Length: 109
Image 1 (cartoon, rainbow, N blue to C red):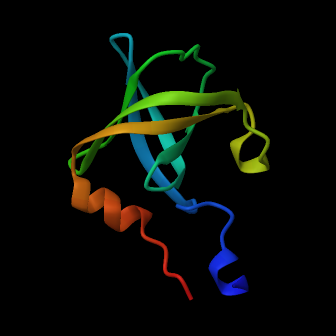
Image 2 (image 1 turned 90 degrees about the vertical axis):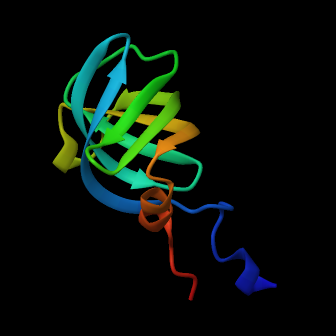
């Protein structure tokens, strides 16, 4: 039974560092993806934005996601000082489903 409770989440987060573009309200911002799971993505932005509605996250030439924000807060890491972290829930994988699945896959020991 303890082996089944290895992760707290059904789909655990995987730490990554990948550049991306966040599109919202006819604007595009260059950002960095810091963690992924099958259901969500954590993104660090260089500026604070007021995201309250649907947006897109795009990893150029590979993956395009339709997302909605779940949280938005200043980043607390030394590597991410003066930046803002947004957590998104994935609504739709528009392009690159196979690439996204490979990026999110975590090996269960």
